[in-house]
Amino acid sequence: MKITLREITEKNKQECFALKVSPDQAEYIVSNEGSLKDAQENESVARPFAIYADEKMIGFTMFAWDEDNEDPEDKYWLWRFMIDESLQGNGYGHLALKEIIQYFRDNGADIITLSTKPGNEKALSLYRQFDFRENGEMNDEEIILKLYL
Image (tube, rainbow, N blue to C red; front, side, top):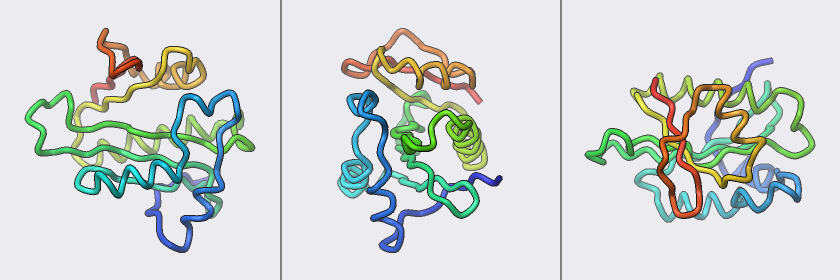
């Protein structure tokens, strides 16, 4: 199985909107429709992608890519990441995060920053498996984690 990140287009946008997290995860992430609205409002830095396993859309991710930011710790954010609830627990999140990290590496990032709510234990566990570490900072009510590439 090959995991790829692909552009969101008019052709696949509705399929992306149909992807959902489980109800108990909904408090941790904005809907994909809301994320694409955020991407339009922040088009200079937002990089949204559909996540595919072979030819099946399985998730969504979005990066904040701000190379003009003078703080090297704050240039590259994993802003959104989700796998459809019907596909969770099958290793897709692990494979997708591996591909996401490779995208950051391939495009010159040296630090990836993300934030999530403290109660989002499934996500925190996954991020920690990839050596994302808390740095003691908060982003509003979210824990900040960083991965140094």
